[in-house]
Length: 100
Image 1: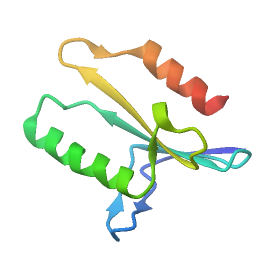
Image 2 (image 1 turned 135 degrees about the vertical axis):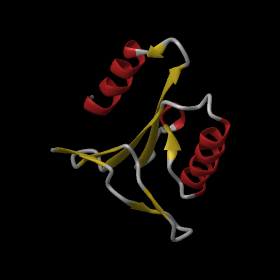
Image 3 (image 1 turned 180 degrees about the horizontal axis):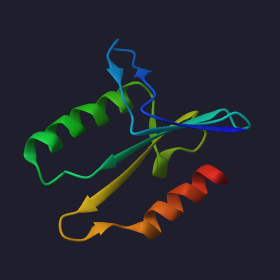
């Protein structure tokens, strides 16, 4: 069974609480996916906050989707390019990883 939630809190080893955009828990595989949508990376302050949040994920053992073999917690990132919008083919590719 997969459970999909929006804005489920994740407490990192630092004790800080993160709020992913979406959390998908796959009971069959034991993998939790944290999906972060990055829509404002052209804003320098947003980009700095994201860099710090991403580093916290990595320090807590959450692995990026492209380097997640054997990981039980996986970070998925989608981005919007200014003026180009969201790459729906990439979203579909990532969704297929989660859905199997």
